[in-house]
Amino acid sequence: MARNVQDDRDPLRECLESVVRSEFDSRTSIVSVDRSRSWLSSWYACDLVTVQLSTGRELKVWLKNFGSYRLVKEDMRERRERELRIYRDLLSEAGLGTARYYGCVWDESKGIFWLLLEYVDGRALQDYEFPYWVTAASWLGGMQGYIGQHADLLENSPFLADHDRHFFLSAAERALHSVSQLYPHLAGNLEEVLIKYDNLADTLLRQPRTLVHGDYTARQIIVDVTANPIRICPVDWEGAARGSSLFDLAILAHGFDPQRLDEILLAYRSELINLGVRPPELDELGHTINCVHLHRVVGWLSRAFEHRYPEARVTKLLDMAKQLAKTCFG
Image 1: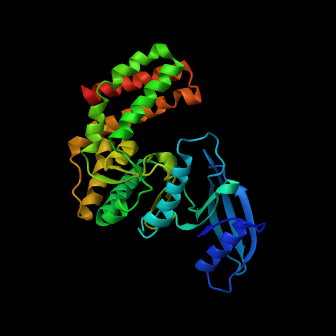
Image 2: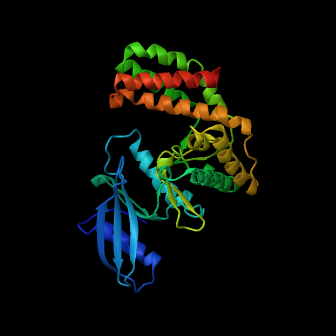
Image 3: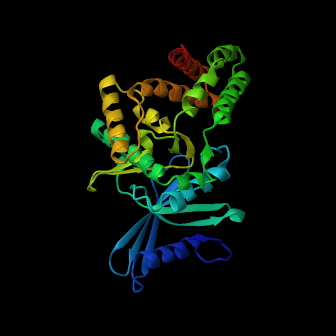
């Protein structure tokens, strides 16, 4: 439930009272509320809100504060609206293990944008051994299978970004502009990489479209090993899009040796097959991983001027882009 802040009442307390009414019986009330900054805060401040209840129980709520940010992001309004609606509208009934949507406090006039979610007591995938990465690949297959069975969700979600041709080519344009502004003498190196960037877009556009997280990395996936079965909970959906079915898998699988790569792909394909979805062929993944990683490197270069990357970092990224372009474009 969204709350517009119009008076001096505590908007967080009001929202939490609504959550308690919906989650517990009418006799349950709030005794106290403790709000503390989480060490997991990154671009946005995130708080752990602990609600003590009259029954002696407690409710833990994750509060993501979109009104605070370390660096301004492009399209911030669209990004926060997108994440709210992913939790509230698109995945709320999916049963995929994503955090439950509890409510929000949204007041643009005061710059208050608080998203309240279920607190998932786990750790990031990057803290776990390889078998949990395989589980995360299975989760991705399950999510895409669910979307495939509910295609209307994807088509009726105008808040999602689109991984269309413009999405890929505009990233290349921004990268060239960024490098040219910051280190003009390096721009020619990037131009050589981008000559065949149309081919990268073609590779990713010809794959089936699904819901894409957009940053399905080990730091964005919470794992709760105490749950049965193990709970996989991707977070930070502000870059969610309609796009290539292999985009997220390529991000998750990048950097693994062939044997482990095969395990990740097998787990992903098996989950799709179980759900009656035709999986990608094995020989597609290697090329796709390189294309997606090249796009991510180009994306990092597009922010070089804004974040004033040192020349050594830009040079390193350009070297990575050159090597990836050789494998992507021949």
